[in-house]
Length: 244
Length: 93
Image 1 (tube, each protein chain N blue to C red):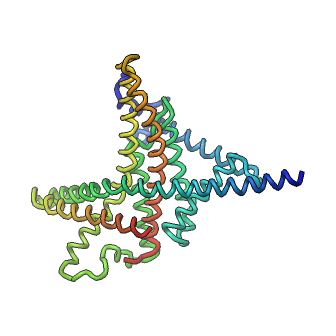
Image 2 (cartoon, rainbow over the protein chains, first blue to last red):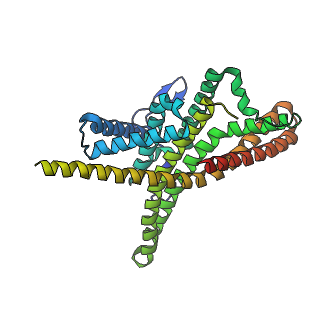
């Protein structure tokens, strides 16, 4: 059981079973870790902004850096018009970042290594951005499927291709995060298993790999949160500033 | 007293400059690596969506293998388009 590298992804219920209208709403270890990261974010930012010193302390500095980082990312990719969506992008980024980072702790559970979680994020963004596009531009928003300067003969084919390309957004967004997290954690577990089975004689080699991979995984955890947020900004930009 | 305060503020400014630079550096590196991760899934996702649409339409119209093949080709084209767009975005930066 302990050597099964996929065992870490098991979802199991904590506490009583809750069923509402045939839907299983029981509290699981996944919900526990989501709650845990949400509380951690809340505490971290509360402490970070509690004392507004001119010379910031460590926590204040980190939270201000995070704010600046996300604000710069939004203004770079989506322009000034995207400013009102800062809270959404910031919460998305910091939640995914904390989920990924908490997943790096031993014995913890990585929420983002489950496709249902990432797909829920991605579909929410996709539907939200589409509604936003229609709300701002009306039916003109359909223009994003019609690139300018295309001969009329090719237009139907191009339109189908553009629509498929648009529909593939939530899938590529969610699969990227999920696959990266799951592959990384499985790899870590496999190398960890090698250390145990090779023992004191040859176990040192996979151990060094394991340590190096942990570093890489921390980078990937940050990077994937960043990529998720920046792609959300890019999609937001497409909806806000219609130019194709 | 005054000197030490002066030094502290100067130290703080220098440190924050350094950290800003660090953020910028990691951010820019992150963009490249993130793009590298991105392209593969962009290509595959569109093919998957194309095949799913083809499959659903086939079931609808009862034209079993034809539409799935057509939409597979459309999906591949959309995947290439996705990669093309992503590459263009990369060059703009």
